[in-house]
Length: 320
Ligand SMILES: Nc1ncnc2c1ncn2[C@@H]1O[C@H](COP(=O)(O)OP(=O)(O)OP(=O)(O)O)[C@@H](O)[C@H]1O
Ligand SMILES: [Mg+2]
Image 1 (cartoon, rainbow, N blue to C red):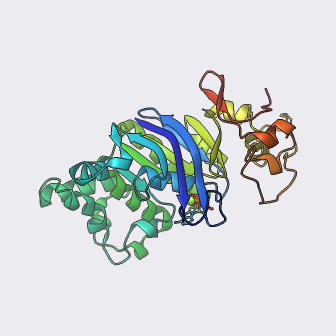
Image 2 (cartoon, rainbow, N blue to C red):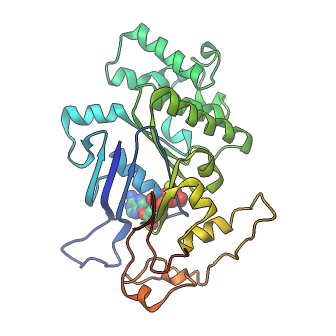
Image 3 (tube, rainbow, N blue to C red):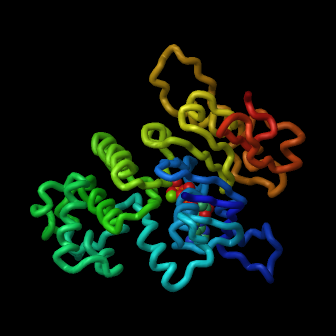
């Protein structure tokens, strides 16, 4: 369903004035590749500033790719224009962390959820209203009639996020980027929204990129996880394997930071040596914080290498 091939995103490039690697460049993503199968929920996990949102925004074409290629449902995202772009906008949607970003506080719930149907000329007015109500009830806003003429500020955070998801789903997209959809919600409501994501996948044959910095949420919903560090994919694999046997030192640090439910399980101390933000362009992106760094790591930047069925790690000294 989705193929991301060597994608790089540079903000503020001043190509002719400065050479690449100048201080004015922010390399938010660096040569990132992964694929997502149909009906798969793929988790993109990493700390703040690692490039997760940038990756999501590129996939829904809110931002232009600097280098590389993204193919979604057979469409080349970079080169879409006109009619094809319109089809893409219907089939590919994004759910944001803050539902207020996605919904206008001055527009009532009916018009909020229905708007994409109007924009894409789907059905007549009566059909749109019916589909809107159906989608709202599916999202747990029941009975829909009680919500239609209310305004976002009259709803709870969880309900607002359900409205935002209903709006994203009403055009029946095939692929959705969910950018930390639960990070602003209470723990009890979080579980409901995560279950909703699982239900949507089944019901709508949906493929999802699930962005989160919360490994517990990722573990709950994702089939596979990609771990991203400073714009580089450092490890990709099935969720259970990533969680139970992380190979990359950064993934190990992430896992060590999460409480382990099983007290008999041995924990490693977080292998973080140096919090320095300075890093050279040569060598491994994780070198400054890595305890296992060898001379080789100072020389070349490791790329993802297959270690096991379905498993990839970008490390010169992976912990096998
Ligand atoms: N429009 C922009 N212009 C310039 N730099 C940007 C822009 N958007 C993102 N960046 C930079 O790109 C890097 C990656 O940011 P991004 O928002 O993708 O990270 P993130 O993983 O989503 O972080 P968080 O977990 O905090 O949401 C950061 O250094 C950020 O400052
Ligand atoms: Mg983000």
